[in-house]
Image (cartoon, rainbow, N blue to C red; front, side, top):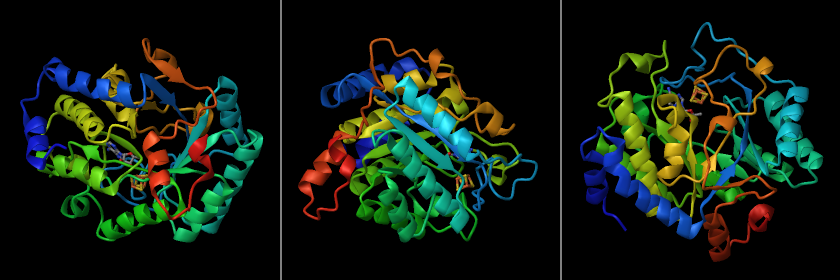
Length: 350
Ligand code: 5AD
Ligand code: SF4
């Protein structure tokens, strides 16, 4: 196990040429190939809505942002996207949206999850990425059939978290949500942004140790990219965008070495900074890609990044797993076997 100092040393070595990190990336990819195989899991991402009650200082769809065309997919649009995913052979979809906690929203998600399950005879895996919710809500959605949940901690340092969020956004509540999700039985994914203003390499090393200590099942992290018009865009980062990309790839590789059997996503933010960003993520040890299946006509004008069509992603040499495999991380199966609580997800063996 790498120590904090070793992590810091590897993160702070000079940035510049990606090829200088070739050995680290190759080592991480080899660890992935040995533990989960030379395999990439594909999840279809469906962005239900960009309405959000939160006001995170870095986010282009924060509630305080004027001039953002807000959209919400209709049920028909959601099912059309799900059907496309299903026909294309995806084993799993991710439902993502800004955070809302009103009953209209909670109930709608619950119904959508049930109907997606029914539509696929229970075979389509469902991951949710819908922010902080009441324990009862997490339970309702789990019982409806969702089995994974993504909730990024964004920054594991409470101090840094405080600086990139408004005063009423609580680090403790976020941590608490992550704990509840686990208790309910979800496979839990979290992640951070890399290259934030006020962030230092020590914070990034601590993020990695946080993932390890939290015993997470999945991780999605990517470079921070200034969103025009947000408060944080006026603050400077220690790193250029190119450096953030390189740091993000180092983070993926180091996490793979620390946690060989978890699912690690190559995020769209990587691609936003490099035309081969997602492929580079996979070469550095990631094993999950989430092609965006949100219909254009529903999305309106607003997009955080310009998503590249999946067809452009070069996965030669990889076993791209679409076929009715949920792609649960082996880590999750091991966690269930070793836990005596018995609150197991029914998806664990699929
Ligand atoms: N740059 C990079 N990532 C961002 N996110 C939000 N805003 C930005 C940004 N400006 C990420 C957050 C959030 C995820 C959905 O998008 O980590 O959890
Ligand atoms: Fe909302 Fe998520 Fe953006 Fe925060 S990061 S404002 S919770 S969509």
